[in-house]
Each structure stands twice: as C-alpha cells, then as structure tokens.
Image (cartoon, rainbow, N blue to C red; front, side, top):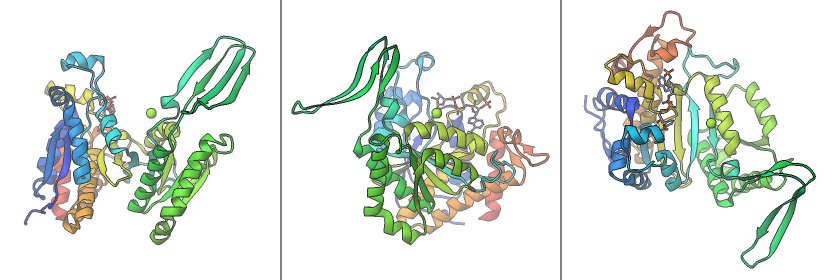
Length: 402
Ligand code: NAP
Ligand code: MG
C-alpha cells in the first residue's frame, strides 16, 4: 500500500522524559509505516532549549504561525531541581507559556471517552470540553493585607492626569484587599477562539460568569462575547446547527452536572483552572485528555494534557518495565494530522487520523490497556501491557483497518 503523502509540513515539537520515549515509538510504529511524514522538527527537549538559550521554543512557535498546525510533546518546566539535574544556564520559562504568548491562544481540553472507563457522573455520555481563558484576573492580581482602620480605594489615573476613584472599603479593623484586571483585547481573542473552535468541532458553546454580582468586571466578559457573537458568528452557528448559550456560573455548574455532555464550556481564568481538574478527574484520567491551543488567527497546537511522566522515565532509565499510557500523545498526533488534512484538503490524511483514533479506542475496549486504566476499568480481566506493548497492540488493530 502506498504511503499517504503530506503536501505541507506540520510543526513537530519534541519534548522530554517518558513522553519523548513514547513520541518516537508512536512515530515509528503508528505513523511512519502509513504516512510519508512531512514535519518541520524542533527539539524542545530541555537540553536543546538550554543549548539554544530557549530560542528553539520561540522558533517553533513562529513556525506554527507559518504552517498553522503543530504537535507538541510534553516538556519539562524547569524548577530548582532541574537546574542541577540538567546543569541549566537559566531557569527557562515554561515552553507552553512562551508558545501561548506568541500565538495568543486559548487551550481546549477534552476527555477521550472509551467504554470500560466510566465517568463518575453517570449521565455524562459525551465529552465536556473546557476552554480556559489564559490571561489576567487573580493570576495577575495585586494584593494587600490591611493592618487596621483606613480607607481602601481603586484609583485609575488616566494619561491626561484625570483621576477616577472607587471605594473598596472603609476599614475599621484589619482585613485584606485584592486588585485585578483584564484587557478587552484578550477577552475578544478568547471569545473568537471559542466561537471558532465550536464551529470547528460542531459543539454548542456555553459561557458563564457572575455578572449579576460583578456588574462591570464580569459583565464586560458577557457583553464582549455577546457583541462578537451577534456581529460575526450568529449566522455561522445557525448554519452549523449549534448554539451559543450564556448563563450564570452557578447555574452552569448545576446544568453541567445534569447534562449528558457534548459541549464546550468556556471559563474565565480561575473557573477554568478549577473546573478543568474537576472535569478531567471525573472523566477518569489525565492520560485520557487531549489539549489543543487555538489562536484567534487560526493556528492550532495539539498536545497531551499531562506532563513528561518523570517517575516512569526514571524507571525506564533503570531498565525497569513501564506501563505508560500513550493515548493522549497519540491523539495529539491524530488531531494535528486531521487539521493538516483539513487545511490541505487531504482526505486520506483525515481518514487516517480517524482510523488511528478508532484503533486506539478499539484496542482499549477489547481489553488491552496500560496499568493506569486497568486500575479504573469496569472491564473484567483487562490485558495489562507495557508502554511498548500497548503501542504494538494499537498497531495490530490499525493494520486490520487499513
Ligand atoms: P505528570 O507528568 O503529568 O505525571 C504525574 C503522574 O500522573 C505520574 O507520575 C503518573 O502517576 C500519572 N500520569 C501522568 N501521565 C500519565 C500517563 N500518560 N500514563 C500513566 N500515568 C500517567 O506530572 P508531573 O510529574 O507533575 O510533572 C512531570 C514533568 O512534566 C514536570 O517537569 C513538569 O514541568 C512537566 N509538565 C509538562 C506539561 C506540558 O508540557 N504540557 C504539563 C504538566 C507538567 P504514577 O506515577 O502514579 O503512575
Ligand atoms: Mg489547576
């Protein structure tokens, strides 16, 4: 059988530790035998980031602007321990942060659903995708402890010197205050990324804030979403048969619990931080969660939602067997290949992406899985395999489908 060709490259960002090991296995066993892989390769492994003074990360993000699609392996975000372990020149910033800053995107996280790994919430039948706004609010807040009586105010001094003040509180006793901000541009980008992604995957979009209490701050989020929706997306949503639905955050939480899933839930920064952990653990496992960064300009970067699985890597280095789940990394590749196919009108490539995902799911549903899933599956007598065995099992399923 002739291999599937790719007219345009996609940006390949290699990474660290156990996921770097899985990365190579996935390419060798699941991709290269079927596709004439066309990638522009960037090594974001920590050693190479250190050698290039992290320029490689910036270059890979700029390449994503050029080719529009990237696939990224998990990478180490250095801390003090990594400084010594890798003899680093500097404590380089999180590559994901650097890439996000260049592409200005929103991250969408979606659980991968398989029979035998049941969500804790029994009525959830379809995935719930969380879209988290990644700028501002409490994450860029400034705070103060108030030692005793006194007046706390919000003060804005315009460039022309005009001062606007708003009373926070007349303190008579010690307390605390916090100031936070957001920027209309950032909220607009967030809204467009969400609307575009909803159209892409044809799922309804939900958005919720606390606008009844926060009549200026949260209400601005609500207004910006509504204005952009009405002006640019209402017709497109109608044509796609999907809805934009706004409600209060507490109402949203109640509805999410009672829903059967199958929608995107756009969240402000803090809500997204908290709710994505709730959603991912309720659906089963971080290793069964895809993540894609979508920029308002239509650039896509696919990755797994988990990290480099360091503990497994150290076992691997000692020659011990590992049973690391490669599903999220496989889906990062299938997501990127499908998007490449879509942009290039390459039907074969899109079909291959579908088959790769189906082969992965079928393999698990037939009972072959890694240890993390075996611990939570409702299937009886699962066939627990090692990291490599799992990929080989998917290969066997895939070959039967091709
Ligand atoms: P992690 O790599 O996600 O792993 C945490 C634990 O979750 C693992 O020890 C393992 O549990 C389980 N796990 C995660 N993925 C798994 C998989 N695919 N298969 C099986 N089990 C899996 O998080 P971490 O240990 O906190 O971070 C390690 C490194 O990853 C850090 O250097 C961090 O900076 C980096 N990181 C990168 C990204 C990214 O690039 N997007 C995201 C998060 C973290 P058991 O050990 O109990 O089996
Ligand atoms: Mg969190």
